[in-house]
Image (cartoon, rainbow, N blue to C red):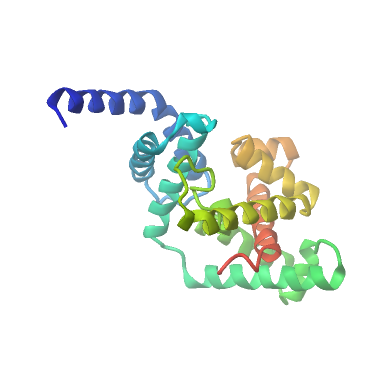
Length: 239
């Protein structure tokens, strides 16, 4: 690469960072609202910037998607990878998460409808407060998001596919279809919380104001909604 080309490349990266830094900050603060103090904002911002730069090199505007949409997926994915690398979640939280998802699946198959909180708690042989405490642990202790259900940050990909990638691409499309259908089957309130959180990018406080419930209750609803999805998509997920 010539010196002139190198400077042009550097200028482009600087321009992208300056233009989309607010997007990185917005996504970081959105995640931080559900994370404990042990996670540092600066770490998320740094990971997000790396995701932004990666997106700038892989984006192809001819594919029809907006850069901000593509970059947002890469940025959030990079931040989640950073969080997972420093997994500070107690094993009990992972264990309880799997247990609750299994119980929800069993109950809903038996009942033929969505299981209610008190029914799940009863099957778990615990009080409703204890069950809600588990949901809070799952929410605060780990980012339980769409990505954790198996959706790759490359689901919306701008890269050309080779024949070797055809199967993986088809599998992602089928998973996305299954995910959309599973979300449609969620209780109305659960689906609304996911829509407000992921599609509208509202934080827990804002969602709580809309639903007239506390931030803690929104967090519980979000966790339970994700565990319902894990149960419905159990054949697709590994955990």
